[in-house]
Amino acid sequence: MEKKSFEERKAEFPQQFIAPLYVEDAKFLSRFGIVIPGKESFPLAYVKHTPQDFVVEEISPEGLVYTIEYKDFLQNIRELPESAPTFYATLVKCSLTTFEAIRVLAEQLGCSVENVQYAGIKDLRAVTAQRISIRGVTRDQIARVVHPQFFLKDIEAGKGVLTQGELTGNRFTILVRTEESVHTEFHTQNIVKNLISARDHGFYNFFYLQRFGTPRLINYKWGKDILLGNYEAVIKSLLTEASDTELLYFKDVRSKLGLCYGNWIEMKRVIDDSIPDSFGYETLVLTHLIENPNDFLGALKIIEQQSIFWVHAYMSKLFNACISDLLVSNKAVPAHLPLPLSHEFQDLLLYKKFFEKEGMYPPPWKNLRPFPKIRTAHREVFVKPKVTIHMADVCPEGIRFSFSLDKGQYATTFLSHVFNLVSGVDPETENRFILNHVQSLSQKTYEYFKDSLEGTAAVVEE
Image 1: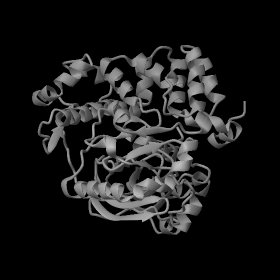
Image 2: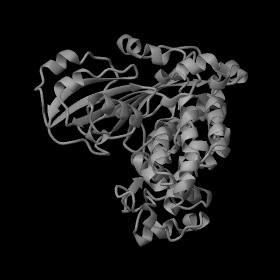
Image 3: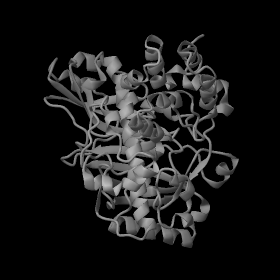
């Protein structure tokens, strides 16, 4: 059967590509350990209607902002040496995860994904800019890179390599689409009050939904099963478990995969007959299992970067639960809290009741040994950071925000302290929010990503 793209399948079955509606209110967020005081009274707001509603620009350790502005890099690259230990570039992407963009980039460069490093992960449904380092390639290889959903610019030759966390933070420019009622005096006063509170006193630094693998939002389960050594459970869920937050098309594919689970060749055929580009990790896992039946740990090691991320997602849920427990118990929340992925006795004592609730205390760290890049060590996170607000402006569609956050902080976490965020669409949503297309990018950047931006309203890609 001919391989079909996401857009081609969407054109065939449009009703199966309408993103399900859900509101990130107190009840919904509780499944991720998040409790925000006063959440019940927050107004509704719609974010990421289109990728350009959500712009993220990385800030370097020196305070330089890597922008999303399009720039033709060919003239720049001709001035560089043919080879260098390292080439640095700004990666600007649209509607791609950082992992997927780097995977595709590495394929085009003909190098390992390990040769492409970055300081931080950026949002999927957004237009984002971040610095990357590339080793083991030539200038001419970089010059041949082209993709409709990302481009490179500001390329420099140098030495060394970027490391995780090597950034100051991110600058966000976001259109929050609101109901007309939000512009009443009551809601306006509450929004202003919450913004001032976040600016002056900070907001609770929960790990937010993108940490849990949008759109499925179940990767913390896989992290827990990896810790428990239930490697097959991870593979089975990855392949067959549908989520109430993903598109109907993908739910149907997972249902078909469930009917033939264990027949790896047939499962691979089901994916090949759907949208194989949207099942990259599943394809890698099945390809391994076809050659190595029932080697579930080996399959997870094939996608080791993702497996590590899932373990950290589970630890993030426990971190969230710890903050929420302190808030609900009216206990003092310290300025810093350690993460639970630690061998330190005092750290484990803090999380003891959460691990016990999950049926694993002390944590079976031995099951993480096959993943040597996962290190159990003491690491603290700032619990209540402040936000730097550059601009907040009311417009017909809602409110535009520009603000900066330090590394390790989520824009949606900050916004969730002001609004109950809405995702997906239904007829009622169309009547409550202005969801028309708004061009908020520069003309050159918009033109480059035009095909990725148009027709993406209310659709969340896998």
